[in-house]
Image 1 (cartoon, rainbow, N blue to C red):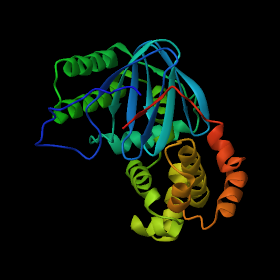
Image 2 (cartoon, rainbow, N blue to C red; image 1 turned 180 degrees about the horizontal axis):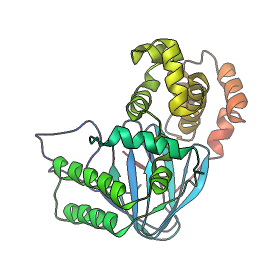
Image 3 (cartoon, helix red, strand yellow; image 1 turned 30 degrees about the horizontal axis):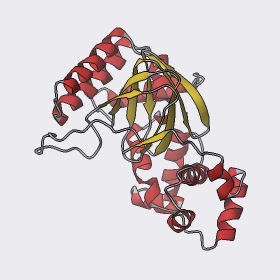
Length: 288
């Protein structure tokens, strides 16, 4: 298990709810890492080397040297170093400027005409400058949340001024909707409920208004989306041998092992232990 950077001197006067301070990570060739990011979006910036990354239905997507990849919250990401690799991993939650909502609407319209490549996006020189500054601050022992929040805002502005709309859509494709705040609230809260009606009520919407907004932002019905997310969450937990089958059954309210077995075969294509045994990897590190 790889030891991550220790940060004992984090400022005690301000601690945001999401992970802000970056990590500088060096991976050996063939080494694997896993990140379960329930509350925080992340960015990976590849300084040298190359990785392949897998999540949801996407497998072994390439992220090369001097490229970056956005990791949306509420996903389990696994990546493998193709060669010795140095990277920066940093939290990146919503940065809001007066232009944010208007730009989100434009990007959402463009999204319909863009084919999602699901691969790394090139770091232009302006982004490299910001990323190298973060690396320098880490090496200097600076663990100030305010410092890195400013860097995140700077990254947002670099994307705005130095990337085309199409490049930005590729970067944030999986989270782009007509209403970014609605998207954020759905992603923040859907794991707290079991039904579409409960989620609509939690967010303060009537069911018809909620379903309309949901289709506008996620391009499918909330019921279908929640069923797919549930199956993915179960699959991700099955792939983690530290979580017992009994624990997964309890979390997702399966009354019997036969019911759980039937669900996995129907939605994931195999029995729980078959899914677990197909994912053994002795060279995996898990990020907190």
